[in-house]
Length: 197
Image 1 (tube, helix red, strand yellow):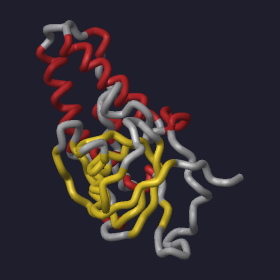
Image 2 (cartoon, one colour):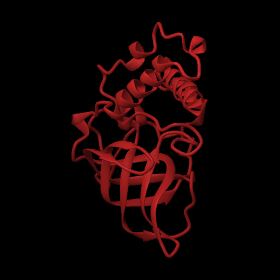
Image 3 (cartoon, rainbow, N blue to C red):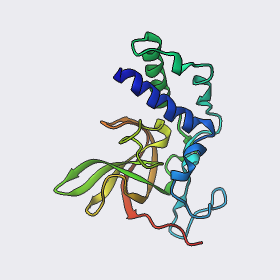
Image 4 (cartoon, rainbow, N blue to C red):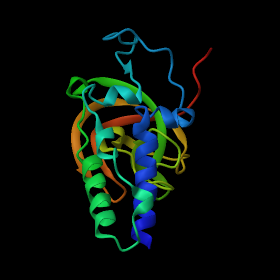
């Protein structure tokens, strides 16, 4: 029973996320500033990116869901369990965008703590929408960034909206919460403030 609920939850999240390239969850995304022209950087040398920039233009995962009759699957259906494993594998292997390797970037997102010491945050996952990895299954690996902060920081809680800045590295990693497609070491964190109109 639990496996099928997880399958339906994962499949539903996958379908919503994939339906329009994450646009189904657009209302939950933090608003980034007005995008810079391609290749343009701010005065501090950082390029603000959007979550869709992390996804290669040729990645089309929708095909995994087409033709599946999830509502017709029973709790003990081996096909349901096999599909759940296939979908999770697809998301864990989601391709990254190699053009972003080594760039100094800034991105808004939601915080999922990984390591805290004496109330100070040291490591986290940055995810694109509220509840990811906590209340709903994790998004594809190319939509999760493993962050190691430059110095431990206080004053942040699970799912706080934040800005993260640092050097983006294409690096697939397994964590207790999810598989990530990117990493930032010595990153800086700031409370999210919406861009000025």
